Image 1 (tube, rainbow, N blue to C red):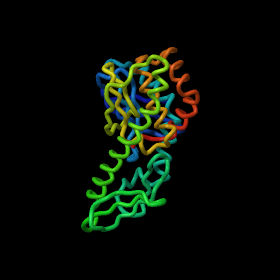
Image 2: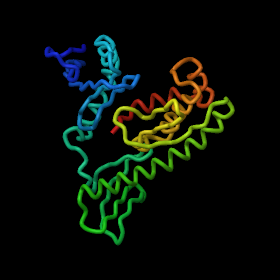
Image 3: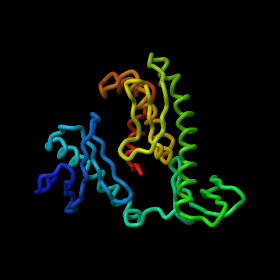
Length: 246
């Protein structure tokens, strides 16, 4: 059940699922698609194009209610909704689908590296959470650039065989509601947080956006091209649905 607020508002709404009241923040913008996200702080947000009807928003939220509830429960189980990352030793941080234990140590030079099952952050002085976060953000950005570039280079020859244009540019930025986008100018933008998901999921998102270079709409030709270059895309998409944008 989706309940609109009694007050005249286009921002705050309430989704009721299995007796649970879930506040939803709705924001309208110029983009042409609906984007739903669940943050680890427990915030549920929906971005919608200007002029989207209440009925359409209601249908979208009700269809995604189990997905929303599943992610909220996941964050509660991890203790993340009530306790955001403190960037201290012992926390689990994901990379390519694997959770690594954060270890913060002092050393002669700042660095971040994987060491077995640990994600080690080296700081020059006594570690401060903002310093650890800054170093981790830079490391994730670097890894995202390397992984996404490699994945796209491996996928492009498959699309060449189907006459698809090559991307004009790859951009990487942190997004809260989308894994990736493709512009009419041929610019592929991938969510930096995607590098935390399993590699097959990264490959699916990259393939999905690359297919938009030839077919901008989600139509039969688009899905035909996607199936031709990645026959198991449905399984990968389903696996990705278990990941939440952080």
